[in-house]
Length: 215
Image: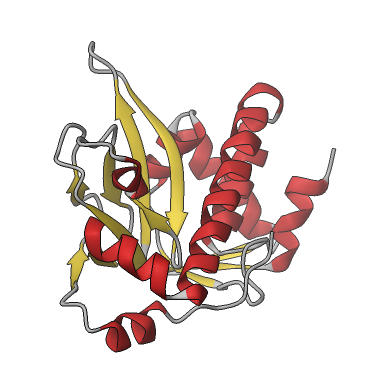
């Protein structure tokens, strides 16, 4: 699903709400499983990993989100506690919108409401696609999908080509493979011209789609 760009900053500036923007470094925890669920977050820049941890301590990554995505929306459905954890995977700036304020904005701001509904539908499609990936796709293809998703391919009219560099360890947790295999895949992608790795950034080329589309 493609969505047009939405300037949530302009929406918040004209809403009269006293929201705040918080910056996080890589691997910094935004909220933990069991914390009070009292607000919705919007990613102005960067990326976020959503994960859940079992009673025996096993962690599973359930989503990788990028710029323009919402998360923490379970509070709108009356969820009192966070069902999982959110961790920054790159330098990130996160808007925090209180539950009551978010509900009012969704009621009053049609553009925001449309964008939010589009986000929820896209998230549902992603979850379904991720499940299929885990059942049928190789780790290499799952990595390509994760990078394309973070760059906004398939969800924005103009996907971002340059991302803050993400650690191989974080990507390995997301894909469900080893760090050494992630390193090998990234080297292969770079050799084939699908991406370029800088010291701080990762540049994604449209040709990375070939990895996903190739059977």
